[in-house]
Length: 373
Image 1 (tube, rainbow, N blue to C red):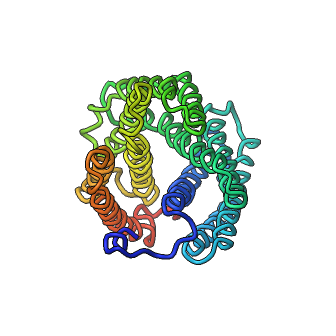
Image 2 (cartoon, rainbow, N blue to C red; image 1 turned 90 degrees about the vertical axis):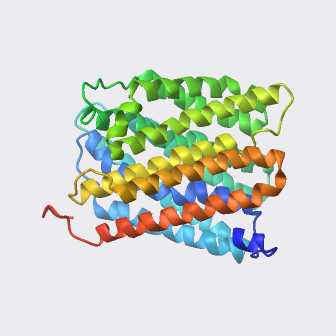
């Protein structure tokens, strides 16, 4: 679409592109990473039996069908788009039920990360229902609420909660003299802050949003420091997770600065800069980091990121940087907007394509350690 736009052409669209972009990026891309990871880890966190194949296969197939219908519906017909969004929500709800059925099989105390990730999944489902309602009613408040709650206390909360549990755990086995710090209060405050951010954003109270963003930034910086960000650089696979988490701190700082600017009367300085710092730098980088680690570990390979995987990850950081500085720069020079969007999209596609080619080869082979899988 960007290539056609640069040539003065465009595909037929049943929705404004930015709304279709929000729909796909919030619910259509990372959902599979999230459910795949949680369906593996939830049983392990509470020492419960693994989720049977049939319980995770059907939600995955239904969600895949929903995404396909969404892509077709965005170009062909709005009814197909509505059907796709509804199908995706149905698959999401089946996946949520499959996860919740794990809890009665617990053999001990349920860790706080399970109810918090479950909350993010419930909010994600409700936000999808809100988007579907918007497609029917065209009520703008429904759209703003669906996007803001779907991303901040939905997608972002799940990724940050998983990071809160797993980054200290992984660091403890790698960084010398490491003290595992995982304060429960921090993740609860983050959950409240993300919900408050979504409320302020939905209601248009950006000038007061710093009341949520500033505490979020402080907590994210505190955790990144206590988790020893710089000590992780000696192990690339671990550094991926630490770097991705630091982007959350950057995004919350930018969000707080944006709010302060709005309070002083400057309402269009940062644009979507905080959102892209969190979404590309934080969420996308964390998904790549965790997916790479899980792929290597569950195929019996050493937990080491080779030069290619490390280069791909660093190149993804370049995408985040381009989006952040391009967003700010376009406020001063609007003519650069198409160029930086095109550059970031092209680099993203190259990174994703090469990364996919590497992991697919692993998925199509038996485990190298001889174990089933």
